[in-house]
Length: 445
Image (cartoon, rainbow, N blue to C red; front, top):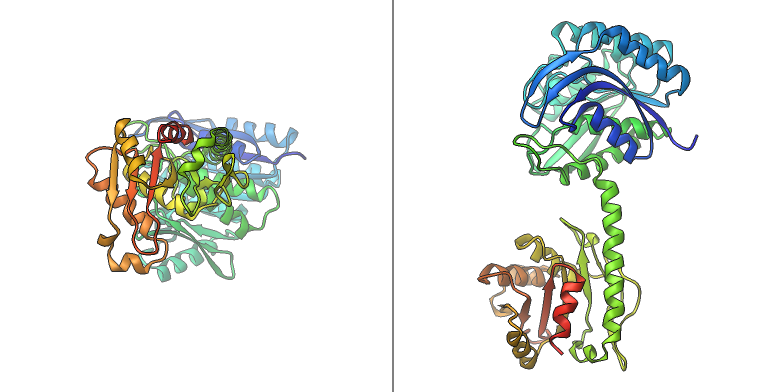
């Protein structure tokens, strides 16, 4: 089978951010073949759910029968199930067609507080579907409601996870997104022990569809016969990226972005391709060799919203000065220069569009040329560098770049560093991309 067949049994979100829509996007991006059985139609947007229309239970069953009897199911997940009758027919279909592995996301309430599962259905969900589940994925409020236990501390969360597993599920994943602290920690109880899956908490209101996307990703990885813990680890990385690059649309809670992983791969290719193109242009201008400092130059370019040096590409071995000009030693690669990455990442904190930079030789002549072309120039003075920054290796460029940008009256084109004993003075050109940096560079020769 060239791809995994993953079934989602859930409600439709007219706003496209959660439910069936989020599930199918996730399954597709991860390389699976998504199939669906729609349990309810909702009228909703980023602010609220304005209406719910449950699908007749017999038609929910017919959808599952049609898919399972012909195409087959390698894994499935459930989301919004709306009412007791739908829970009952879904459990019946899961047993009849031996649909496994099964991830049960016990969706009880929408992001805006609208009930998505009737109270009489909760008992049926626990009694009929939990025993069929390879994994149940409640968030903290859902875990508290279903287990009847507080989830305020880690010890209490462990008790709640054990209690939920005692209701029949093979494993329970308590999602920590509703918790506090700098880390979003999810707690897995696999029936014998606990594992924590943690990622930095992302400060955003755009988290609509998080649970749907996460559970769909887990189901897709499980469809590949992936070990449960490994499937959760991969899905955690996927949902963290989807939240990090979530979409600020609508007037309420915008959706996560399941396409971010695919788009990020495309962006990585584009970053490397543009760097390589400009590297060839630099080689054609022999006079540019005069701008190379003693430590040689490098040209970097970051992914949008880059957060680490691994998301900034540059030339390994730098751009070296040869008789015929500046030339790359090797093709560009991500993580190739922590120095140029420090400058770019610091610049992006103040001006997110400044994703490219290049270091060149400092001289008063070059500064005069830059001023003659109307370039905006910023400075930082190493003599003002705090002692704690000096003691942290590699922190000077970040500190200096931030200092220069914060004190500049407008967005600068270059930052001047006059150096100090043992530190070569340097100019660092800034631009929105390598072509922007190159355009400025040729004017300085």
